[in-house]
Length: 251
Ligand code: ADE
Image (cartoon, rainbow, N blue to C red; front, side):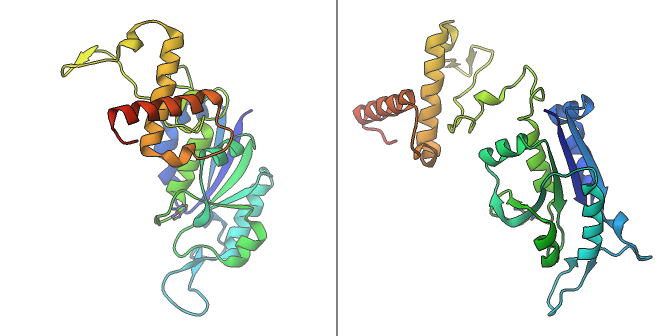
């Protein structure tokens, strides 16, 4: 199913580069992903096209005006009935699982904040979901919106070509990816693991899964701390830990 996203921002020009190239750029040209960018300032009605104002109660910073944002949202909602997603460090942290849920939605609206954020009443009236891309503060919601579009867009059928595939990703199966190698076979005296040259698909698959698990145990053991891990994964965890014990190594 195609994906249709409307983005409300004060800086639509920021999106041109990241969303016009590579995989997402191709998907847009093919019409699999439709992204409409709306300049919030175009919905201001005064002669100076003001979009923000000082906070009631005083203090530093500016707050984005609810009347202007409401006009922008209502206009966009006439053609996009999907959920309104506000990008903010106060939102739920984006994960692969949230990206997958959004990929089946087919349409949504992204609202990018700036300055100190948006008037709370606009939030209460229009925002369905608040998402953060991590525990750090950026200057606005534009980069987070682009991150979200990339993470969701690549999950849409037909977006990833032959050069990549979502089912083999890090996080798709909840594990980090195994190491990758390409030509030359020997580089700086380092050989590609022999199993990858063997042509034995069963062994290659098992080696990759095992290295995936090894990497996850070393770097993100929290990802393995969940119920219902497949039996094969549990067995390989056991195998790696027992090999490490024999080596006297640490996991
Ligand atoms: N706006 C500013 N910082 C952000 C973050 N970390 N995630 C989402 N939106 C933001």
